[in-house]
Length: 518
Image (tube, rainbow, N blue to C red):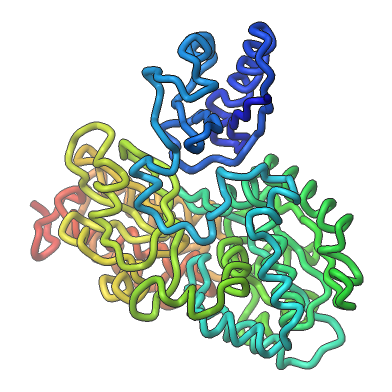
């Protein structure tokens, strides 16, 4: 009887030796005449334990990690193929506390299945959402998404159902679905995990979206830095076509939806939907003026749905279980679950999917385990390089779009980067200004010039020069960026800069109250 062993194939696990570990396990099994079936699954998202190897036993899957090539012989000596005890033994995978406390809806299959096995996907409730959608009217599909309360998971948190309804009701001979997979925020990797570890869920979500609004063509705009995701998506798309889940007659329904992957060259501004469409059209990635909205005049001037990976990957479970099922998770106007990505100075970095409502403090300590250095966590940046820095006094803020907005912060794409008390917040604020200057498309003056002047002023402040003049000048520049920029790149750069100045004034050499030199 064959023994089933799982070794992750996602890029994080591979970067720390998963391919070498898989090869060593296979060779050691051959040497000992043990027949194994080696499956390359996706990562469970417990990155401090990667490469995490799992073995299927009568009690369930048992985990060992982090496993290096040098551990393989001792694992076999300990009879790990039958769940034997070993210093790296973690117990039943599903009982690991980090996983057990989560509510995985979008990530339900990730780490369980072979990412590019269509049979695996279908046997784990895959394509049930599409099957249900094919029996509904377009309006009813859109209503299910609207009723679920799903909002854009890419950062803007715009209600997905409203966007779909606009495209549905805008007459056109051609409509498009675009998946914004240009995941460029620091500390974010949930999009990548979905595409590498469960590509079919994204394909299914986009297919449902296409049927719902009458779009026959979809594009996944993928950043070129994600070669593993590119390979997985193309393999999955090929299998979906071969099995009738994409193409001209989806599952005999007469419905058409075609899908392809397009690579972006890595410009951060192309994560903004209009700049992304310019790039898709073969032009320089410059931000467009709005209106018109993409839902009315988007790609090639046609009505276009532009959604993030996580937004689209959340659609299949909504059509499978119903909008009410999804809406029952969360709080206030933030419904469902949010995949949060823990990075920076934390003991336990990785992916956490929970319902909205948990506090930031619970996330940092119950899941993240506190700082990796053991020092106090001084600040947390949530929402990527344009997100505010939250001080310890705001750690009890619930993970909710409105609660964060009330603190002049953003949840964004759910990236959480922690810093201990050795971090210099003025240096970080300077980096944010420099980042904006480097990534600006240059179309609008506030972003192009304001960010450049911003990091020059930050250099003066860090050097302690003329603080009574330069601190007000920094605030004035931020005000110009906030109110005059064409898109969120310039418009949100003041969030990290001003939050750092307001909450950590001493790092800027100024007094707590009056922002005057100390």
